[in-house]
Length: 328
Image 1: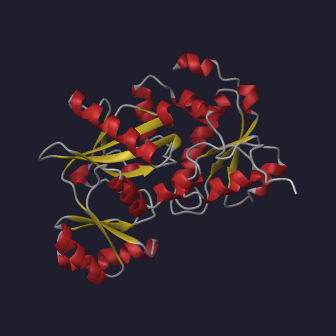
Image 2: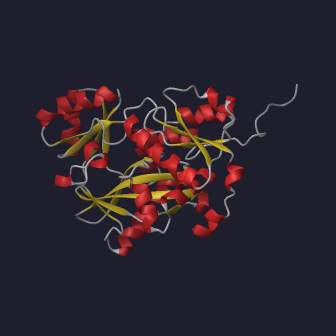
Image 3: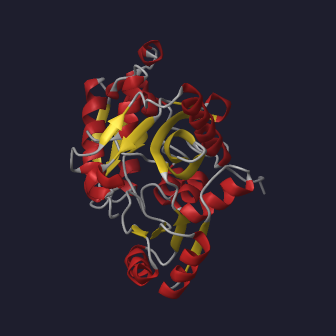
């Protein structure tokens, strides 16, 4: 791994914008991710600059001579294909999946439809439009059931429902963040996550992380702001299970057309040790609590080298020069 990083010509990367902050509900975490990435890239000699998309127009990227972008934005207008589309129009290469893969992965319902169509295991679900439909989903899926916005990250707006009386409030909370609300069968078992790097046939999984949260409650607070949650990497799972999870997340990554990097969340059902895909994050956190850097460290990749490798992989869906119609 280190050998590859030594071959990256830092000067050839040019002037780099680390896109951070933004306007989503995950702005605070994005600022922490961006600060870490910025420091790491500068430590490797990259001409990197902070760029808060909530305060500066993206057109400034072109005017200021930025050659590529490291996307450290999370949530809406960061990992949902919108900023990726703007960068495509500007012709500035960026890290992570392209427009289509980013927009699909942000929509958990659409992601699950594609995975299910491709035969990949994901918990049963219902899309609902009212508290009454949420109760109907509970009757169909069984308790406990997860109710969450279809297009939010970091467990924002999520409720674990165990009885019909909770359904109206769970729906109301989720619908504050998104008109599309997803009810998902709860899988009892080990909570795991696994990063993927690369593209196409070259995509590969990093070590699996097993997550043990207080009372099994891995919420926004426990993800980013407390030290109560335990992360096991190596996972401590049997090698066959670790291998199965890694194969599954690479399939999930390729099926959505992802490139660069992502991190998939998987539940391993206690009863039969079957892994189930929950979702895939196409702009994962890079904070001090974040999981991709933790997994990379277990594979012998430092935080700085990870950031440099991701930056070097920045690209466009349509390479420069490939755009153009037939001459009149």
